[in-house]
Image 1 (tube, rainbow, N blue to C red):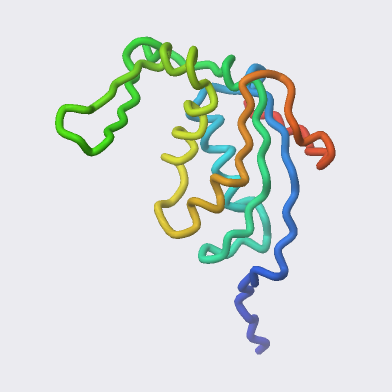
Image 2 (image 1 turned 60 degrees about the horizontal axis):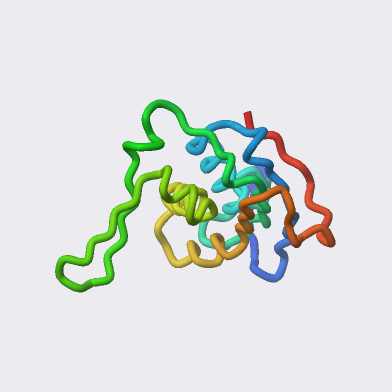
Length: 147
């Protein structure tokens, strides 16, 4: 009987790829965020190891054209607080889309990632752009369809 060893990826052995996702041609915000989170974690790789950050880079374009369903444009709220009494700020999805469309995707993906010491490095590999132009052409990202 032959025993198999459990594979554990080491940080020096990680190979990262670049992926490009167009939010205008993709699914709704939640489905898009789950797919981005899977790519950032490296869940689709055979070398996935939960305690090592072996995910890929993700470039998302057209964040201002992301789709939502129902009444989320007006009903979904984003909160931030400075820590001072009475300084809770609230914005709807519509207001956030006008001012900071990138933050909509970043906050949705942050909610999909596990809350541990690897979250900052994973979010740093997410590059979000409001328009169709992006600054990562030199990395030749592979286009990914999210339906």
